[in-house]
Image (tube, rainbow, N blue to C red; front, top):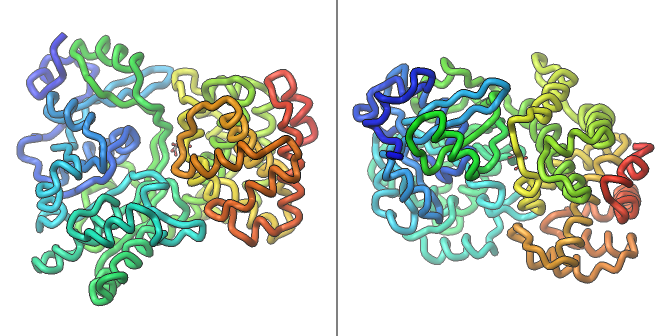
Length: 487
Ligand code: CS2
């Protein structure tokens, strides 16, 4: 079977949507850091639609480390397929990415793109750990990548070091500043990124830091679309639908939402005409999404894996888990939120449950379980903190955190691989656990990278977490009804 490329576009079945613009003519206006499946299924798709309305907004995608995507997409002239999986699946060939570069190997080209007068926007999906933040949400100066970049500012390996170098060189060239948009699941993502960039710049050049603070905009965003990792089944399904082979398609659900703080340093694509929401304050949307969707995702991942389930869909077929998530939403998460007037949280959370019940999406719990140490603070711990301050219940939220601790203990016991930047430390603590709930929980709470001291010292939290941990010590699909019974 021949490969998807520019030439094959004209022979695809009629139902397949193809780029509605001249790819050769569209210039690069955006540099994206971290072109994983989520970027390619979300921002790149909005941008593809915007390109059809005109403008030089094609994307130069910079992979921070891996080379696989660059090498595969190069053979397809950087075209790839988006499969939207629902009761009626549809396929769309995306042309918005013009090139994929690898930071390490294509450094000169990367800097050229970042400092071109024609580049106006940098977007990022580098995952939570890519921001190199400490437990307080500030740049971790002791992080090994940050130490490397401070010592070698001309050849950075972190996104933060790279952005600072790019801004410095742009200012030297006299170009317009950039708008830098974090599209990761961090609360207050724009502010966190801005703080990290400023803290890094201030280490060597306070004038540069001041200029960045004055001129560069870091809008906050909320991004949302469930995007399971690409697997062999998808590759086959896409080949069947297209009649040509795509080596690296992406898949997602039909739902896709992007809310961006309306605060740009320069021009932007006509994203507002293709479904992106611009607003003065993203925090209401962002917190609702992070706490309800991502918070329940992580909870389901650790509880579901403990019961032997593989996917979100399977886990949600269990009536006890379904009821538990509903009550978690209603009793503990919704009361913590301050949504914008137009957002009905009860409706929003019902829609999330419907999305989880999409049988066409095989979203692996093991994928969601990655990087718990980076995700839980934003997804569950901040909600716990707010509820404690307002004297609200936290018992269900603590079950989610306790399920993570039990997941770590079981990884330590079985020796299975743990994907988490803090894996070595987490496993060390987990190996020392002997089933005494109070002592085990205390050992985990000492991890200040995850639990801020105010929280680990809070007696209500410690008690509830210990109870949750105790409850889950016999977790299995059969015992779930009893374990979650009164929650
Ligand atoms: C998931 C997210 O993998 C995870 O941790 O919770 O990727 C989630 O699917 C997206 O944020 C949905 O927008």
